[in-house]
Image 1 (tube, rainbow, N blue to C red):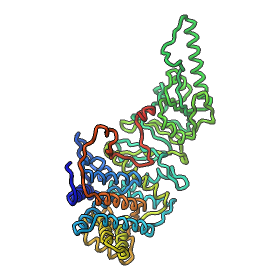
Image 2 (cartoon, rainbow, N blue to C red; image 1 turned 90 degrees about the vertical axis):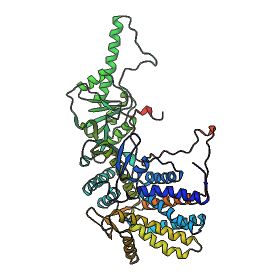
Image 3 (cartoon, rainbow, N blue to C red; image 1 turned 45 degrees about the horizontal axis):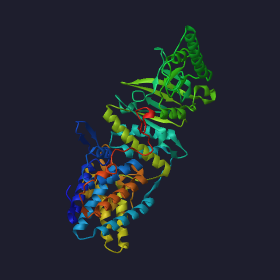
Image 4 (tube, rainbow, N blue to C red; image 1 turned 30 degrees about the vertical axis):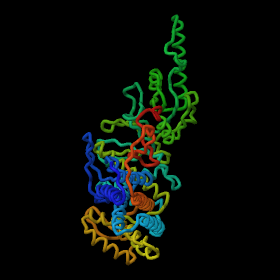
Length: 549
């Protein structure tokens, strides 16, 4: 990349950031359009999720790359608003470019933008609407706002209901610990086959966890099952490094077999004495133990991952023990249902602990793997939005209503600011209206007429007036009445992130091409844009001891 300075550097950076903004702008809102993404290996993905799009784009320009980084932080911290962040950043930079052309200094623009962002943060608290964390209907409205546009109305309603039910299952005293929520994506069926399990769903195709009953007629379902968790192996212990046993006489062989049988009988005795119906073992189980357990009517499951063992404890109330000799009936738990089920080509184990357990799973279905993966991504964002709403108890009107109200307040506020920062604050207000302008365009409305009408309504004190982009039509109306709500933190963070990105690029006056020195290897600042939502634990498909290698 060639070095640029002065106005050329500013123009180049702004153009790159605006190009990224234009690329994702049309996906914004419930009527946003889809993007067809084609990778270098021919993989095709169709999505209108902003986070998914920028993750898959090959970004080479440093200015656009910085916008993507800020958007990724938005997604990981609050789970929604990625597209809004990019669109706002592009609008702020477009306004900044106009100000630069009039001769306004970049530091003045940055100061004005910072003043405007501070004012927005103050005003948002006045626009906030209190939400009853116990009101599931309000929570479903928030969930619908987060996922509407990704599916049709019926599917959005259904998935909003399921996400609220999943969050409710792990919410305790208005605190949602998303580490206690597992999501499993199984393709090959409709969204409407999605279900919430009060416990754990284990995908046995991707997990090392394996039922090992030698009886082909063993039942697939255990009702009201007593569950034991053993964080060890059920095998004959041998000296370290000893791979063979030398037997010098038939008596030695007899004694060895007797020893084996005594050990195996002790293992099975400890398990059955505890009243166990299903035993999950973290390591392997010898064949003889499997047969003896099957004969006693106990389902044996070996190589249970360490993270799944902990989740099983939360699902059943069982306490993992270090060795089978430590097991007592006080360490066991109870599962309402333990089931092995075939879902298409995938076999899963479902451990349903019943209502009130500290672990829940969302078994998410989709027609294809791609569709199911995209659904998981959107639902993950919805979980974060619901978590924020329950924890903070406040939301703001969606549909562009909040942005119009903030823009109106900034235009009144700018008169109290001395100096040329006034111009930047006014431009900030104009940039905020890019959100309702884009929503209007995607809904088939005239953007200019829409902004004029929204400004008039807000001037009359109707601060909840925004765009109601319903499935049949698009119109201006009361968005709170329509249930178009989103957490205040999403809007606040989106505006703050966009301001941060815009100020970063506005203040750059030179792009310098540098050569990496040999001793710089391993200390670069390249970014991987793949990210997950903070707090939602992504499944590891390998063995637990492979972590960190």
